[in-house]
Image (cartoon, rainbow, N blue to C red; front, side):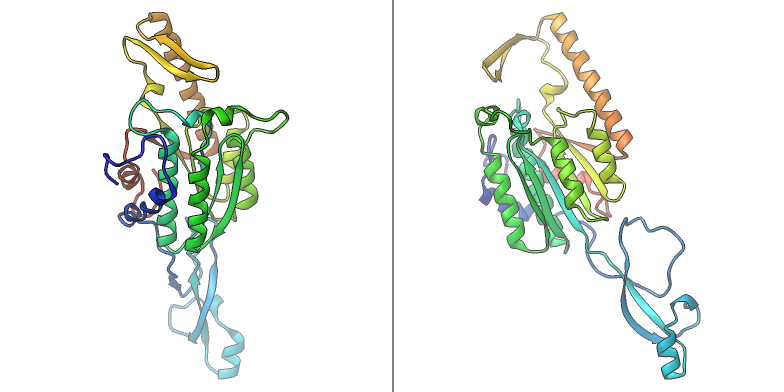
Length: 315
């Protein structure tokens, strides 16, 4: 998708489907089995994966005696060893935050568009690697859950949910019905604990502007038994104000104007950014989650190509 025809404020299902082309340039570990003749003593870096029986063959020097199939050995009157294959297929779960704070950008595309694009590329990437794909999509008012499955139809259903929820206007989202609970990041993390199987690969896509005292605990609970990557979507204006000028930002009750040339305003804003950055860093550190940042000015496919290592891990 070129910059000229790229959506700035919204993206449709056809646009998310076209991201298959970007996914082909990336790579996650394939879900192919690896044969093993003996059980190792080292802990596997793949959390929650096991060994599935493959076949029995005649014992060879060097085989682990613990893998001898004694029934076959007794029946055939010669030692035979069990062969196993490591299970590589794993569920991939995408937590896609499309809340009100993501309906914003000073450059590039809205944060919620970048979030949707990242979810689309990762979904196609995982499906192409033979993994199951599922997701939790939430926008402050609605939370939709789709359990991981290895079917193209499931990916299309997930991306359709993303396309539908990211089109909801911010005014609609602000009109939260009285008594309705917020469908926010913490709620999605709680739901992920219920949905995710041990050993899942989980991507949390959010701007993380609305973390709470519980966010770190919930992230940490997920990370104990799964591989969790946090992709923080940021607009440059959220990190540093322009040195001078009058600007307006959309607020719940209309536009809010500010003068960035005011030294006290600049100082107060910088202090707020510093405190949030420190709090978010501590949140990720306590949870044991390695974060990565995606700017609204970044091209999602290019940034993922940089962030995904040779084994498909962020960092």
